[in-house]
Image 1: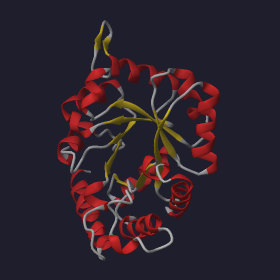
Image 2: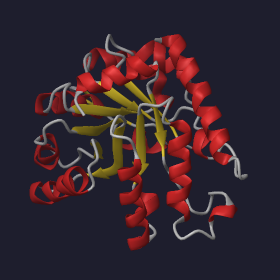
Image 3: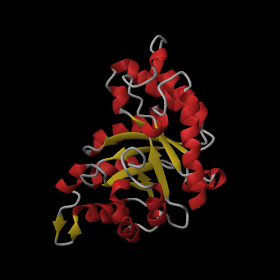
Image 4: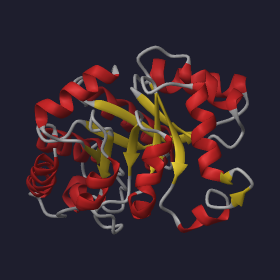
Length: 266
């Protein structure tokens, strides 16, 4: 998916909502567990219920990889089921030496057909470059995250500023606003105005809104650019809105409320 296509979907739906399919089999409704592939059925119903009010889905691969080959099969079926009109993110946080990263990029972009993959930049340009070489695909680099451990490295000061600032500046030289996004955590809202000055044209994937405490209003006011420039991820508050048989209906309602709030900020 190109940048222009993504922006078109955002404008069309008046939404920059990304629904996170962190589908933990221990948390899905119990009535699904007797089915051959309960997690896929959970995902299928969620996608059907939310696709009209979101522009993106983010699959956290850990919840699938933990289940071995069956989980990987569920992941493949899920990404194939997501409509092609939606931006499909593999939240895999990969990053390794060049030839290994090339295989990761091939797995997520060619074999699985994702539009984007999250990448850890710690090992430098050669670990990120293979992802950036794919046309009309996106590399989403961890920039300033919302976990407490962000202070261990990302927020460490150096002579040239914080470490996360050096990451943003370096990555902007490797890619462009057409193929490079950054993960910027919603619970770091006070930093967004400065981050936007450093990366004025780039899109951000913003986790941490909802049950993690991030404010959608504050993020929208501080992080948007002229092309909107943000995808706000909401996982648990939507997909686990209910554990009853009407879970998909309740998830759709939660997603719609989020979309309606977003429409007011556009």
